Image 1: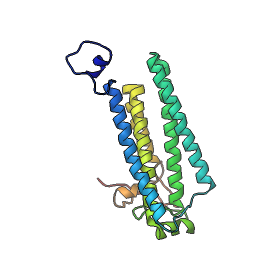
Image 2: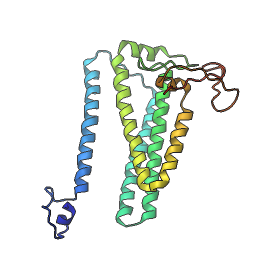
Image 3: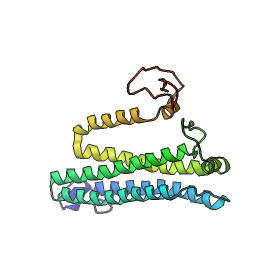
Image 4: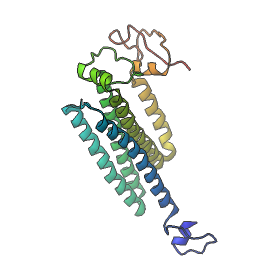
Length: 237
């Protein structure tokens, strides 16, 4: 359609309104909608911070270092993605796949560090009412007070960063499909299973009521220090 008009190929369709590829226009529209979504979230966070007296700043050197590394992953992924596009233009399929995999690796690194940051903050007491208490961890007064005195801080923080993490996760899955095609399906299922098994039992409790399941040994035996000897919380469908 629009592609034929741009390249002066005879066509029965009218030329593109913007004189460029329809796929490129679609990407522009996607980026525009993406910008509007995150712009709205950042505006809500900024408004809350400006209009609320005593807005907390509970992040210290460890969180700042973690965020710095996460930012480095994102910036590196932009470079590797440009190199993947360049390889695609040069019709170098092998280099394209390798650069896409490198971009995925940067995205996965971001997701892992993001999950680590969330786990650390939640264990210290920064949470929402829907979050269960973390077994075996003593909440710090600073983070508990933040959740009680300025509850909108935790809600905006988890909404904004959670949306960002979801955005990157979907991007990694999309790149995996582009780079590996059908070969990515078993890898995706393996990653999903690993994430499910490695997720702490107290988080799985969000999905449903508590059920005591006793396993003498094995992967599911969570031990006495968390939920009790051989007990695990699983969701009921």
